[in-house]
Image: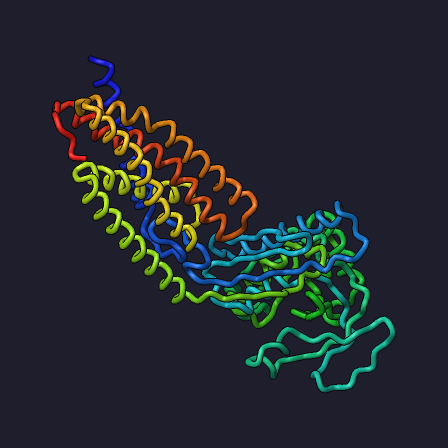
Length: 464
């Protein structure tokens, strides 16, 4: 078999594999159908397309902190925020550092801005303090120098205001959440067991288990109460059960505890996510907040699709009128290009943003430009009197260097946008970079395959 024929079969195999792989990645038939927010098929949508909340946080780092310590605080803060957000199940969150002391948090699909504020703004310093007394908020309490008055979390919820209590607690905590290993939501199947229907189960590490046992033995069973305090709010203040006290006396350590309350399932998941992630190393102050509604995201998608259709039709008409049958070949290349790019986005789990859609539209122009370079070189060869087969070979040969130069320079620009950009700019750079690389493949393999078929038919004139 001649080398040219082998080359053509290789091109055909590559194009076939690219099309099949792209369709499989987009539609993912091996996965069971399910309703997933912020996705179209297997394409993940950014906050600007599916709606959500963006928060800009300012870390309250003391003056005089060294650059190394400052960066350690920022890295730890980002790590804690990522753990909290992931535990809550937010779809494709984006958490990035912006400047020396600012963090930008994007939560696509989040419809509750108050939950977002609590998730990222809570310092989450869990403390266990001894309760001295409690009563309604209007009651006048006498505080000792080592005591302070804290409010129960029900006081911030209008529907639970009648259950609101104020607590006089010791300032010095008996132990802190630094020794907490895990916090998880649990559901009580036995209403008469003394636990609320939904509660938070706490598991301490080895050091914490010993500390918790010592704390229990310091208190009087069925008399003394211990408050679980998170960011100066009392979430639970149960008495020490006699059975727990006896367990602590018999065993060297106690690694379990609970936080009870009138929690909804969402509130319990939020509290467990905050506790599991641990405390932030410093206070994060929310300095800017923006909310994108789902309807605005849908409108952006519809406008982006409309713009893509208009751009595609205009390019189709121009290419067909100016390059005739060769123009149809160029349009085929662009359809193949878009299919493979979308498949690559799905396969890489990349997030499509509104600037990303702009990158797809721009890609149509970049791809057509490559075909124009090749077609114009072919025309020049035909004007010199060469036959169609020779004009095709010479056109690709002469245009190749220019195509490589233009694609590499654009790719370098996209690379710097991705490195130094944030959020939507990165989305644009990702789409553009994939498009540039894939366009080289579709132009040099896909379009060339069609023209090789034209050569095999030994046509004497090109419709160009």
